[in-house]
Length: 541
Image 1: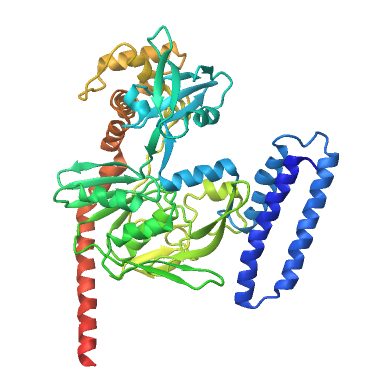
Image 2 (image 1 turned 120 degrees about the horizontal axis):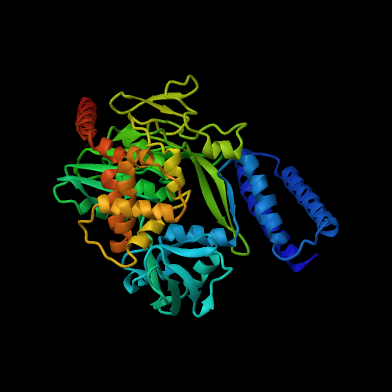
């Protein structure tokens, strides 16, 4: 057996050992026949190694190089986990390192997003305040060399690996930029690159704050608290959780802790054999109250659903948008050998009213589970749980968080798909072209002259269009052009402002703040009634 194969088999043995130890603990808790099960594990592992030995010796092509790792990391282990549920997951070394980086919320490097397009690696955006941003790299720059070594043939992953490194070390980045006849070379000093989970916060209307939260990582609760505290005389909040895939449960609990009243339940975890765990607000909001509209969509999941569900159940926020993803399984992460990890489902979580948010995945393919779930659980479906909020409003479980007010996400058309980021990525490339020999100020608007140049650019790229295409999509075109040009000139934060200011879902969410205020008033009355009832009961005793 080759060394890579032995290493992969060893990883599998460690993986089974971790599962066996977890299983043994559970079996002792429920009184199962652990010796018989341990024997079955040994037999299963022997069967696997026998099969692998036959494959390695007789497969039509040699199992060499990374193929052994791929067979185990991308085949055997994920295949086994997918039989259990859609969210138990194995992380190979690269994926495990990325997961830990995402959880920590920072890494060491130069601070830019890159992407491979047409066999070239482009700078998508440098993060504000990072070495790449301060040095003057721009979206649209093509990375041609790193430390003098050409990037020809390099993947974006390999380029990213070369850009990262210890804090304080130098890396030389050469780029090709439209309008420049020679490559530009930048000497960058690597630094700690924060990757905040709150990527946009600003006063979207006088007295009304807007906060967009991308994920739940180790710094999230503090970021959210700082964002809310940054608004003077806050009279309302739009809390945008669209596209938020979740993350650390502890951070979801902390976010809720500062928005709810002390003592209110946030979430409970229930496992097959582990003791139930209930999380409550231990600090509370110190009486600071303001109406909250939480904006969600079908890609709001996990920890983001915990926050949405807790605020909805306690009538603390009005949930608007689309029914969320429906992930109510909690994974415990185990560190394995060879810098790998295992995220194993150990609990289901329930909202304060007792709702299980997990969507049914029995008999559903992995693809359909992740991508074809829109409308899978209608609010009036007979198989859905019916629960009540603190004030007696009806809410549903078993298929994500159903919004109090429905707002549909804008649907793209064929013309938009062709020009957008998943098509020709026209606006990204036009911004680099437009700014090649000019600059713009913060009052930049897309006028007739800009549109005329944009049409010329489409023609030069052999991208077909009609005047009807442009007129029918004019608002979208102007926003898309402005966002990319402003991002290139002033940074990602200003570009996000442009998008938020024209986002129809955000504009609609703002109209529900009076309804959120009424909900907040009702929540206060309910709390006061409960406190009065407790006082009366204590007096009677």
